Image (cartoon, rainbow, N blue to C red; front, top):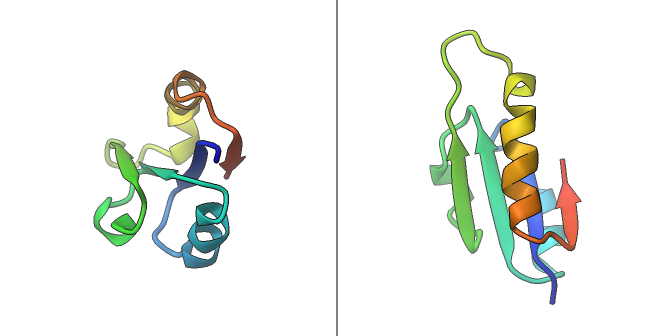
Length: 76
């Protein structure tokens, strides 16, 4: 089984989570969105954004976080 990451900017990713779950444990990186909708994931990491800050502003931080997790697969 591999480490699978899903980068989500909104909670509308149920189909992606279902597909990712078939590969192993899933870590959701919730960028600027509440973590609650992703409770089915093995792990959820929240990346808070300031008011009016676009999700792209967190790209470098998210990339480092994912690289440290030794991903087998990343859904974005």
